[in-house]
Amino acid sequence: GRADLQVHTAFGDGMEDARTIFERVEVLGELDVIAITDHDDIGGALEAREVHAQAPYHFELVTGIEVTTQHGHLLALWVERPVRSFRSLEETVAAIHAQGGLAVVPHPFSLLTRSIGRRTLERVLAIGDPTTHPDGIEVANPTSAGWDTGIRAIEMNRARWGLAETGGSDAHFTEAVGAAYTLFPGRTSDDVRQAILARASAGRKGAGIPLRQIGAGRLALQQVRGLSVTPKKVLGPPLGRFVQRVSDRVRAQR
Image 1 (cartoon, rainbow, N blue to C red):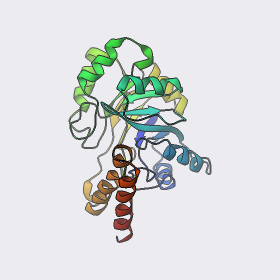
Image 2: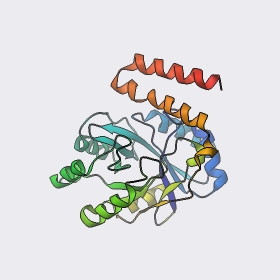
Image 3: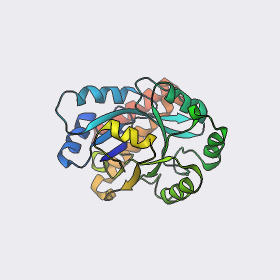
């Protein structure tokens, strides 16, 4: 089966709502599972689950979050409750495991976004505590954050760490959903979960999405929307709301 384990919606800094994303996934018919992983908020995934339940979609949904840790981003998959941001990597992994979720390191070592580095990952793995041990590492990510890190992540993981390997589109536009994915035995969300636990998954990239297909205007607007996510957590709700209003005004004038 194929699972896209990193998709963002308009609940966060993505450009389309869950229903629009689901309709595209259904039409394409290439994915068996997708995970909604908005930044630092479980609300987008829970909202998406409600939408998913309203139609007989032929793919399954995983609820998740892309959590900002002190050391970079971390995917929390199969979670139902919020995971607090800005804790250490090991504390965040432990919190994810405490609610039955799996922790996957996305776009590792990237210098273009907040990413977990090699030394941090090796330090946590050396602790030898399963509760703080990440379950997987994303080796296929088609965005600029993953362009230069995927091959290095594969080489280092296979030589030193032995984590499950995953792929995710990191999509913020519907056109990009499925541009990278996780291969696994089976077809269901439980199957992909078990594959990660058994280290039986693999990350793959699909066809690339030309930037001109998305358009410069939408790309710029997404960057503005992205500014409304981190300020809410780092600089406080007032600034976050201000940036969100600017983003909404730009969108209304398109």
